[in-house]
Amino acid sequence: MTAAAFDITTLVRALIEANDLIKQIIVEERGFIPEGDLEWHPVNQGQPGHTEQVMFVQHFKPVNADLPNFGELKAWARWTAEECNKILTEHGFTIRLEAWPYDRQTFGVVAIYDLTIKWLVKGSVKNDLGYPYLINKRPAFHLGVSEAQISFYDVGRGQPLVRIPGQKSGDYVCLIKWIRPLTGFELLDEVERLRAHLRTRRTLYQWGGVILPNILLDEEVDISWLKSLWTKDETGQIWWVSQAKMQAKFAMGPEGARARVAAAMAVTREAVSIPRPDYVVDDNIILWMERDSVTSVPLFSAYVPKDNFATQTVGLDSF
View 1: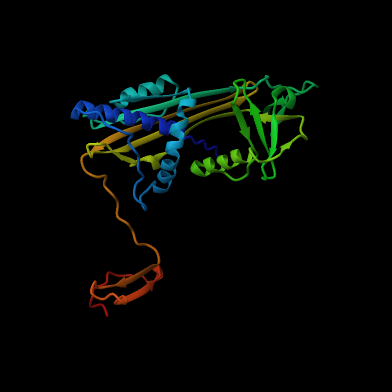
View 2: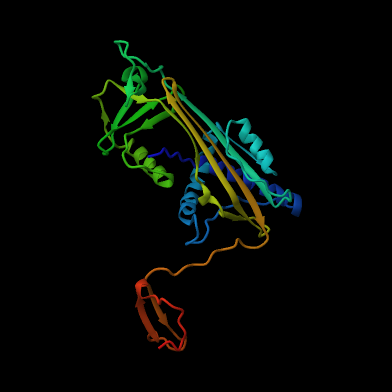
């Protein structure tokens, strides 16, 4: 099993930055100030990324409303991939946008956050006898319940949810043992369910501390599903996400936890609608034939399992 990080705050922040530049472009090219906010839309059902884009759009407004509370999150809009990639390099990220012609039809956006939560006390790497804490023969560390003000919650999953506060009031790291791998929106949805349990489930008191692993992650997150997400400006022009990259870094150790995430996108203007792929009828179907002047019943109806699809091209005189 491999680790799988996921974040949508950087994606929302990047698209808000894109919205601001699109409005600026309208002012420069059309001479009027757009009213209202641009809304981003998913591709049609059946197209790659549709399911994920629908879920992303559902999260967009609530996440946007929370952005003022996330001071560590910053964003930039630039006309070239080189400028975007320079920002990524300066902040220690290795993802890159591919270059595009400098024709003011495409621009790039980058959003980055660097969030650190330090424990109330530094964890111990050795026990009272001087032996190192180990998990699966790898170095670990210990935090005492009282000193670190740790809470354990029964969330009905057979394992306690551990909640560790940080030095900044209101910041926490929460974790729970979990067997089945989770990625993307499935991971996000499960975390949201666990967070909801914190308000209703009882606190557990049978542990005197927690022994935690050291964690160090650095991975490129696949957000290719975001490509072709689109918006329409007040002049009727379509803008769509033509590139989407994300990199996530996470560290946890005796001093605390730190998460660093970067999202980079290219946004392209199209004078015509986004090319759409064909819809493929590749499963069992119900079909019928009808005529406008015959309203009582269809002229013909049938259920056709996909196993009955012909193995050759069919002409109308085939029977």
